[in-house]
Image (cartoon, rainbow, N blue to C red):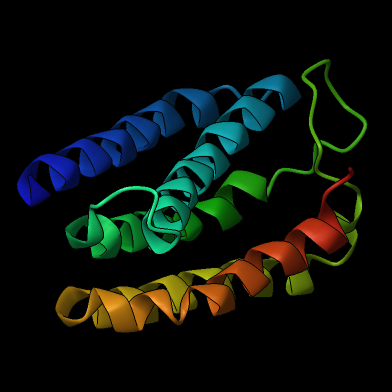
Length: 153
């Protein structure tokens, strides 16, 4: 089962990466926003899996490290995905606000912290998923920090 979950998670990451080449080749604001949504969707999908495991809603503790690694991988793609300032451009709906680009260092730092936390907790989850579950709140704080500062509600 673990191999299956890892394969599915990695296949999603590869698909996102392949889509990146297409989206970044077309630098229209709408294409850039669509690509960002895919990258952040990968973070959200994996965080959803982490949450379901942590809450005991599903019995897939063996998949916890893989989900965390998926978050870290998607987080590593995010700075490039947001580099193009699309604020107020295009017709694609987005919740990213202007502060992403006016306070880039803080935004990029938040993404790096998310990547680091996900990687750190994944290392724990590889050998002790129960101990890793106790650390999930720290990862959630990194998400909340960016959402509070850089995302319109």
